[in-house]
Every structure is written in C-alpha cells, then in structure tokens.
Image (cartoon, rainbow, N blue to C red; front, side, top):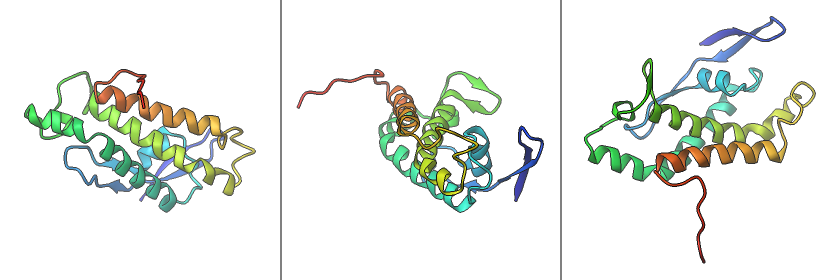
Length: 157
C-alpha cells in the first residue's frame, strides 16, 4: 500500500507502506515507508531494492548488537521498547538508535542505485564515497553508543 506524501515541487510522492518483521524479537519491526521518508530515499527507487537494503542492514546491525540484547534481557527487558530512558511517544532512545543505525546502513548500501535511476542531477553528491562513509560512520557511532563503548577506539595488533 502506498503512503502519499508531497515533494517540494508539490507533486505527490508514493512510498511503500510495508512492514518489515525483525528476525530478533527484542528489536522493533520496521516500516519501508518510514525508511524512505526519514532517509529521503527517492520514491522512484523500486521498493524491492529498498526493502532488500533494509533487510541486509537489519542482519548486520542485529549481529553487531547481540551483546546489547544479552545485556538488556539479563536486566529483565524482553524488548527494546521496554528499556528505560528518554521517550517520545511510543519511541524510546534505544529503538530510535536502532532505527538510526539500520536506516543509515541501508541508505549507504543504496547510494549506488541512485545513479542508476537518474537521480544524479536532482541530488548531486548522493553517490559520493564521502556520503557513504558518513552514513557508515553514523551507524557505527550509534552502535558503539548502544554497546556502551566510546565513539573512538584504538586497537593494537
């Protein structure tokens, strides 16, 4: 089902309002339209491509955040939405961080697709390696915070 919205030009933009069921019950289910809107994904990018990027990002983020699930379930929180902290409506800080990490990684994966659909003229720089690196860094920073690690780490070999 499409969720209508309007672009700056006033033309309707259709987003794919599809639920994405998370494979780990602790984390929230996501929505393809929410990803498309919050990360300004071009509506003419096929929803199947955007959906696959979100699924791949979920797998990567869930794998990285296994210790977060273990920590909070050990404290009696069976779902991320039950973790104490700042809230806005039904969203708490942990679920917001999770979505931020997943959506940033998914958009980073999709940057190469934007050129294929002719978006380079209307969104200059969307395909740049700097943009991709910034999105991956954003996801890494938020996941490090969720893992209660400092933003930067130094490892000796």
